[in-house]
Amino acid sequence: MLQNDAVRTLQYDSEIRVAQQPSSSEPRVFDLHISITSQPRPEAPRIPLPVPITTVTGSRTFIPLAGYDCLADLPSVHIEQTFELNETLTAVSSENRYVVRSPLGDAIFAASESSTEKNRMIWGSGRPFQMHLLDKTHQEALVFRKKLAMGSLCCQPKSLEIWIPPGNVLGRVVQSPTFMQPEFFIEDGNTGQPVFCVEGPPNSGFCCFCLPRDSYFKINSGGNMRASIDHKWMTSKSQYTTNIYFSDTKLTAKERALILGAAFLLEYLYFQKRF
Image 1: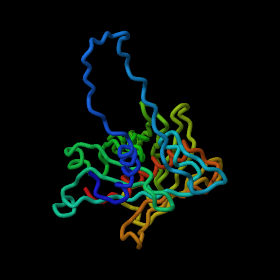
Image 2: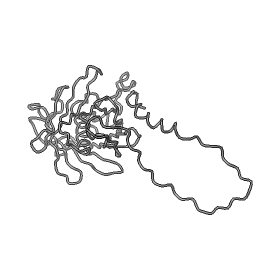
Image 3: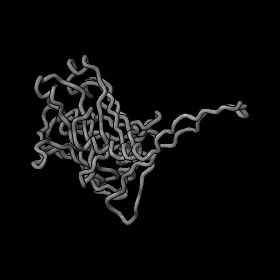
Image 4: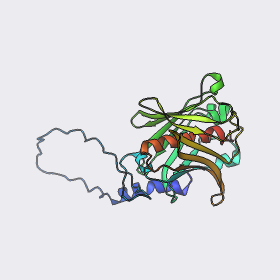
């Protein structure tokens, strides 16, 4: 269980719904003979609950119906890692946990890594994993899948796939074989064409250990800057956070979800120093 107050807020709305449901009554006992007039039918498919989050900007009130739709109209999102007590005391690497917050500090997603202990011990931060993002209704909104790759020089660039339930590829983030600065391409899942180009600090080199803890990435499309990602120290929280700023207000929820996936890939490649 995630030990973080922000993650507990993801359960608040669901607990309220459960508390408001009428309690089950005592079973009824009939003395007379009851004849069955119709056969039982399967239950109707469950319709996903709308995520109870309204946007903080814009001239309209918007209640998203899909998990990643809550990213629409947000000027920025902030990724905070949560640390478990046993990992801090024993230095034993465990599966990472994150909270994705809105600019007002509300928890939008709870992100939970799924990986094997063997891969964490051998490959460290370069390990393959699946990252499951749950929204406030406890439904899976996004899944990030990273395969084991040794880098562009080994003919297998590092990449991350963004999936949405029940099993559709939303897009991919693929590393580009550059030497002077980190570069990635965000590809559309349907066409496979590049949508955005992510550029890291210039003259920082190809090695993932060359970047400082405070780094800045630009996200361009068509020669225009659409968003940015930075990793910096937050004094108010006493920890480093990965922040996404959407400079283009016309970005769709799908494009913002792809950029969020890129931010998680950068988090593991450059800023996860703990093995």
